[in-house]
Length: 312
Image: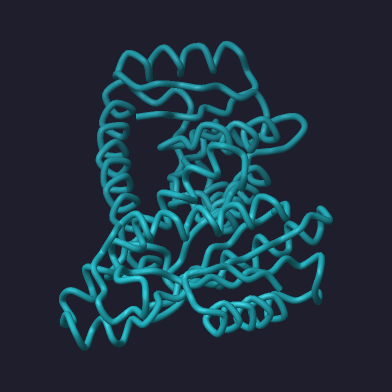
């Protein structure tokens, strides 16, 4: 178990550290409440043992700030046990109201301390399992069930976040809207199972391109989402014009290279896609403006013969 020990008296801290380490725990020491909050952010401990009376910031204030951090950063609850020389009712009440879970009297016997740590180790193990389960649920809730890409809901949240960041930093923001050409005809001719397989393959090809362009510096922080049906979106924060247009052409090429047969796709004979793109430096100052412009460019790409890219 990783323990953050907050104690300003060196002798007490040394004794407690030695005892806890003898039980097999890792211990990080902070000598005041302010350092405790900083260390908590850095190491994410399984348990905090917090002294009350300390310079700079006392234990109650540090506990309040740690609880606030957990709320804003979605960290799992961390047990905070106060260390006190006095087990008065007043101290216990104040500790609980500050967000603490229990308190230990300094000088607690070896056997009792070890028993407390065993109980808290079990709690820490359950917290880790719960955290893993929550991460899996969050991942599933943010993904499209068919393609594994981000779903529309998660895409909207991430667009808002990146848009705000780019606006604040005065950076360009771009997106690509992609539609599989004549997909209804593909479904009608080859069947819905083949249609699902086709969408998964196209999604994989788009994602592979964006991973590669991110690595090469053409795009940075770009991500792919399933917009709906046979439509996909590529979000490119901090996008150069050359970068986002280059990514669009790479995506078109990657889909063509899949060489998925599509007899009903005009003159092409294979699955292709059309892409419309837009950058916010050319357009309005809202994400909706960008999506409308990219969507209009997508329709121009389709009207112009499909299997091509149009920029707003």
